[in-house]
Length: 416
Image (cartoon, rainbow, N blue to C red; front, side, top):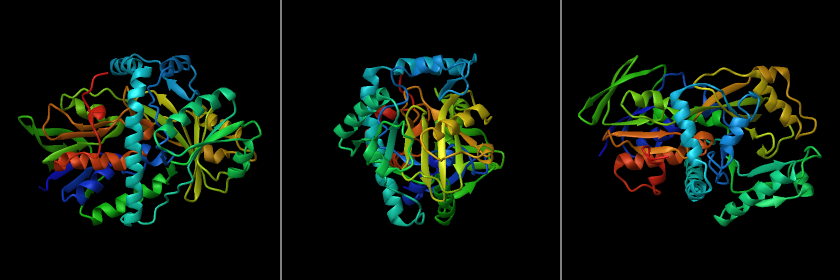
């Protein structure tokens, strides 16, 4: 049965949800408080990463955060502050960072990433969104230290054990794959199972296709409240009027906890800021890579090269810390010979806020206190990779179909 669905949020989660909902015959309205031209969906590294099987909440991560707490240029930065929600989230993160919980999460993360990559390929083949960049060159993990190499080799073995293609490459092979690397690099892991896209390109294609398919998109539209009848939501109040709804999808990224509180739903989630630098000129980068010690991702996108990195927990803000941007540039230059970031490129750096859950798994599914509210948020650094599968799962839930995978691990009200 066709339903009127209001999707709150116009990032990759919201637009992917709208894409699959309209294909299933639902009437869809997308609301976004911005002009939908920036944020995490536009500044990410563009990776589709079945290889990223280890959640952010892994053993030792909280210790790293505390170690770097007073170093605002560090890759993983926790800004010291007294905030009840943040402290509760940090405690849950600590409790989630155990080997047992990570082991349970690994096959779930692999499964959802593989499904999402396949959906990207379906979108590409369908022609709905035009011939957007989808390249299957894989992803290189480049390391300078034997310690980093040994750690990643163990991850590679787990990835291979899940049936995904990956291989170790030595210095000679590495320089054939990617000329121009610094001689300090000892080796790498090539995750052939991965792929990459250009986020800005694909987001524009979504925004062009969806209205043609009958989806209403309202930008500059801030949600101010909700109407309800018992435990059923009947509509959304905004700065641009009221929108009736049979179903509501909250795909509001880092702002989801603020909205969910209006409905009495306490959502443990924090904004993790990431930065990007775009280089609109020829560079030596051929294959997407993560510079392991630097914690920087670098991607050859359609017409430019993007550097992306850092995880900064400092609340909801778009303040750009110049020392963090400079650290990304300086560290990248140490991996590639004759690759220098220009001052103008540093000045044009941008940031986005990733929604991060305490256990590194997203919130996908219905909220028990409301019959017709679904959440699609909390994907952290896997947000771009998991957009299509999240939209597909949300659509299956709303349509009453059997979900494409087991959903228990993503329940919005799970315990930490």
